[in-house]
Amino acid sequence: MAMAIIALTGVACGAAPALTPVTSEGLLERVREFRGRKAVVVHVWATWCAPCVKEFPEFVRMAQARADRIAVIFVSADFPKDADRVREFLAAQGVTRESYIKSESDQKFISALSDQWTGALPATFVFDTSGALVAFAEEALPEGGVSQYIEEVLNP
Picture (cartoon, rainbow, N blue to C red):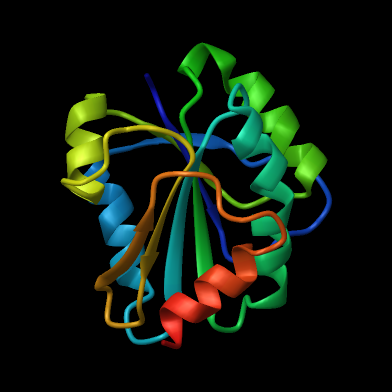
């Protein structure tokens, strides 16, 4: 399973983002770039995952509404050959930020995010402003509850 990583700190209508190779270390470095400024949500999804597609717009809305406090990084588990489909989906959702394609083995990528993650989708990782992983969900979040879940995790 190959994964494309799509960084989103805000969204706007327009062209879909370019896809650039990245390793798990590159992703974690991206998370560290926000340390001291914003919490980070890494959301792993795929165009072929029905629950992922269903909740995706809610993550986009949350990213827009809380862009001052939260950075969202989407990780698509689509194969590189399906990059055009990923770009089309992102464009339809209004995502225009730079995107990345995972450039290492799935297991290394999965393990780098959490030793508890089996690789099942969707998966959501929440890092606080210090860069610490404070929550992990390996399932679709409650419908209509993405923002509430994130806020409860960040403000216990």
